[in-house]
Amino acid sequence: MTTELSPDAPAPVGPLERARGEYEDLAARGLSLDLTRGKPAPEQLDLSEDLLSLPGGRHTAADGTDVRNYGGLQGLPELREIFADLLQVPAAQLLALGNSSLELMHDCIVHALLGEVPGATSRWVDQERVAFLCPVPGYDRHFGLCERFGIDMIPVPMTAEGPDMDEVERLAAEDPAVKGIWCVPKYSNPDGVSYSDETVARLARMETAAPDFRIFWDNAYAVHHLTDEPVEIADILGACAEAGHPDRAFVFGSTSKITAAGAGVAFFGSSPANVTWLLAKNAKRSIGPDKINQLRHVMFLRDADGVRAHMERQRALLQPKFEAVARILDAELGGTGLATWTAPKGGYFVTLTVPDGCAKEVVKRAAEAGIVLTPAGATHPYGDDPRDAVIRVAPSYPGLAELEQAIHGLTVCVRLVGLEQQAAR
Image (cartoon, rainbow, N blue to C red):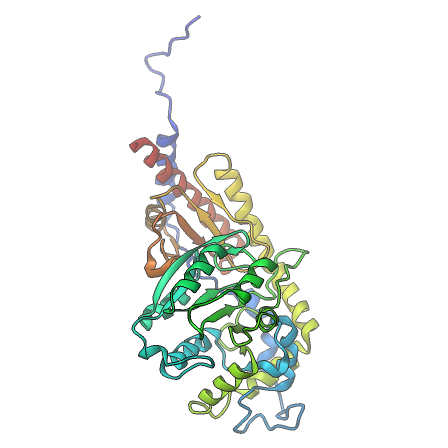
């Protein structure tokens, strides 16, 4: 039996037409939402409000140092003790310095360019070419440092275990111009991958054509857990020493997403030779770090367990946001074949992967509807994602209601662009 439609019945609405209607409704709402950067929300910063009243009338460190005066290039010993275990660096090999680990990475590159690092045969600037291995997707500010100093970037794919070590080992062994690799080893930016023990071991023991090869170990999310089962990674400094390459790793960390993002403390850890090298360089540019700020961090955090307890309070604010992102993406895009996304156990980001050739258009449509995202391509060197497929989502800063609005809107854009691409084939 055939059922005939009435002449007055509306024509059936297909998925693409429905997606276009949803997008028109979204654009008409006049939204103004920002998911561009992984900044702590005001509520997270409020957790450290007591820092602003510290150190009060106290101005003496545990060893009697007057923190108001010059000196103390290594930073306060008691603060280094707190973070030694958390960053997997012996306190004697850990420096507590300024407010930004990015600043320390910048300085280490400058010092390597202009002065020989331990084990080097010449300054990097005197060599014809300098290159870094860049796991992708990765952190745009790392790539920005390379661009700033004319360092060639060689993309290396990320896997579920960390960077593709077959490729890393091949490239590092073949080319003496390859001087380093960027690593965010725990809850990496932006895909949340944590390096396996085997990956850490291979990085430590691999042969490199450059005798002064350095691992820039940016452990930015060392204590930034989102589940009841914190991920632990292997000790890179210990692995390098055991493998006979004690000077290979530079370890960086900070309190930027622990206490006050713009007024925290940054850390550098490495071998005794590398620490001596950086201290000698720093002595020419600084009389010492802000020890008053370091003392108030000691008083506020107290010890490593105090840091962990503080991060549990941070987690209570962040976890619902990441759960909301996962819930909405699953409800709106699950089973469509139009996207996949990560489910990080820590860190600050979710990676959304859309069909090849769609990321820039999704970001553009979202911006036109009032939802600003990190530019497509930012997760790759030179801002160029060859697949045009990766979008970094930063859930931390907006309030929960705004975040839900933004992710719902993002799924509308993904559906529209994905279905338009399918229709154009």
